[in-house]
Length: 90
Image 1 (cartoon, rainbow, N blue to C red):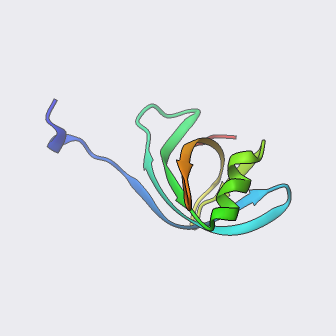
Image 2 (tube, one colour):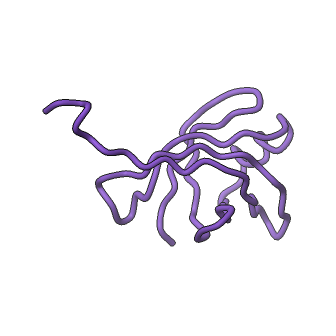
């Protein structure tokens, strides 16, 4: 497979993190997954260190994409002001 023949869709923008009824703005950079349902995309979010700690410790985190749907986030690791995430349906 030639890497140059692959097409990737990146979702880059500002969105809203929804944690326990609290909404805060974050930046996101996600790459759409070719696997599809339930994994929509993988990438990172960034915000204040306090917000990223809240995201990491929360049980149910949603991300409202700037001009798209609301997705559920699964945290994968990170530090400081960035968090690696998976965006899932539901």
